[in-house]
Image 1 (cartoon, one colour):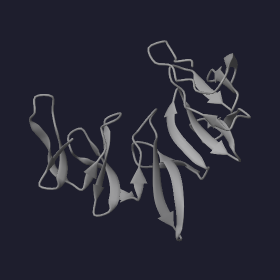
Image 2 (cartoon, one colour; image 1 turned 180 degrees about the horizontal axis):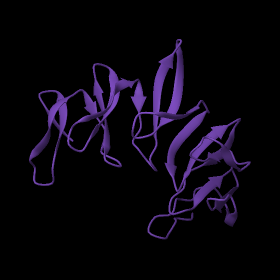
Image 3 (cartoon, one colour; image 1 turned 90 degrees about the vertical axis):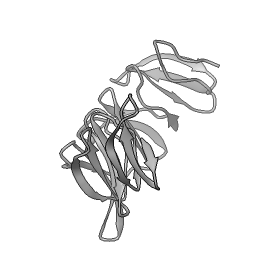
Image 4 (cartoon, helix red, strand yellow; image 1 turned 120 degrees about the vertical axis):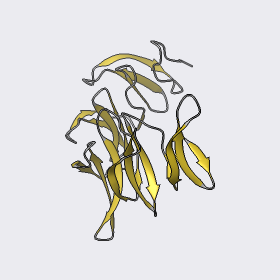
Amino acid sequence: PIKEYGKWGFINSKGQKVIDCKYDKVHQFSEGMSGVLTDELWGFIDTLGKMAISPQFLSVRGFSNGLALVTFITDSIRQYSFINQYGQKVFETNYERQDDFHNGRALIKSNDEICFIDKTGKITIHTNYPYGSGFSEGVAHLWTGDSTKYIDTNGVVIFSYHGMANGDFSGGYAEIN
């Protein structure tokens, strides 16, 4: 992203402007799309700068595993939905917390429990843990005040540790304190 005269656009790796600076705010590109703010509503552009999903949302997250979390108002109620890259609503969600999809699962928090949903919005993994992070390299970690466990995308515990300040996997490793 690049900002000129108070508006945002994009440059390429050679520093050449490839998308004009005409947006109020922008997100990084993910899966070929970038969230852009125009006149207080968010939409998505493609890598050529063409409006792919018209501005209609209060907020947007980037695409991950083909879905993006968006927020809009319906009958004065804030509504959250995951949409596909055509702007079609795949399913609605109103959990305490919703994260992006990774490895086909998205972390949500429901009734103070970390759970994971599939790409239809169905809860597929219950954890009985109050804290957690999404999947990274096919592994998610969950914790309470005294223990941490790592699970695979099926919810099977791979290993556990005492303590709670442990990290996500990256490059095949996770930090354990």
